[in-house]
Length: 420
Image (cartoon, rainbow, N blue to C red; front, side, top):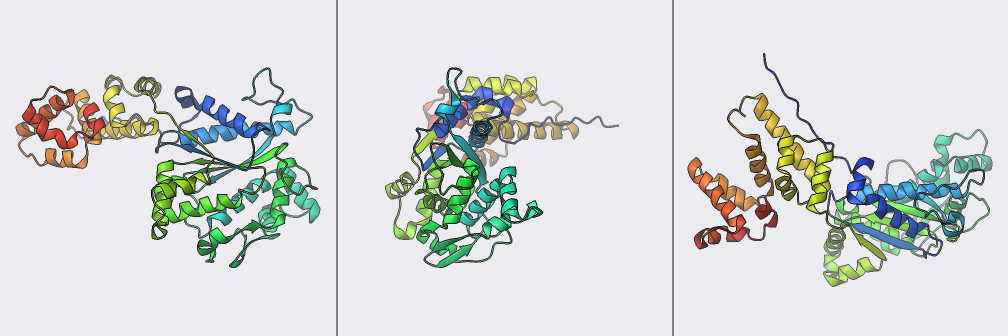
């Protein structure tokens, strides 16, 4: 009877609380939270947290949002104020303001025709989730008014006005409109939206606009760099419509180079390329934070906390090089190798194969560019294939002869191939 082994797979979700200590996300988040919550920080403001996929943008944004949510305690006079990012010698009530936060995953709504409408709906939904807003609307309408209809009711109070007419906001199936063509021409929101945002931020009915000294609306926009160019530009144009509204802060999680390329692609017919595309972003994004690269030793400690096998830990440098020292990608690399190995074990094909050799080989294939793998796999003679690998190792270590160096010169730019 077969004796199967189960692969030990690491979850591929954004880094959680237990991971954050390794990559300083708590400190980064506290810095962002202090900046946004500080009464002296002028608004409107757009901040971009930039980094490659898997570098921790979502984790950082989520942590910053959680810290800003603590500022709601500033409104609860019956309870002591508790804000984790405040220093022990600070009086939070004199330094910080209330921050109402909204999470908007741009990629999740990318199928909708009007991302501005989707964003406003998400803001109103966050308002409706606040018991105070629900009670306020209930008092204005009918005490027995069902909570589930709050969003539809509020959105029915106003429309977005533009040169092409009015766009109604509803929570039903998105209907085709002229929004895609008219986004840049929309010049204002109905005053009802300003009053509604202010009422939510300050928990007061008789307010016309947000008072930035007392509170701000903070919209976190994640996964913008996963959207198609047209959708990316829609979100950027939507943010521009908030740029004349005091008390509004946007925090983007996106690779700024990918966003720049999206702008360039979308406006290529208008010849907005290169520096012009970068200038376009500069008009929308006032602050940028590039997530710093993770040092290999930090990744080694991180791997140790993930309960991977000893054989994996012994090859940590090879694994990290294959994953380009990326926290999330290293999980993918480890998971792929673990699954492949268990498949070989459970099918009886791992007999005579050393696991450490298999790990190194798998990491090599992960790191190698397509042309390298094609050249290697086109060698059918196993002895010649082994010779090719041995020559590649000599080349990577800088010990190869001139002839061998010429053979591998086309791969000189593949830095992680040499690292593996």
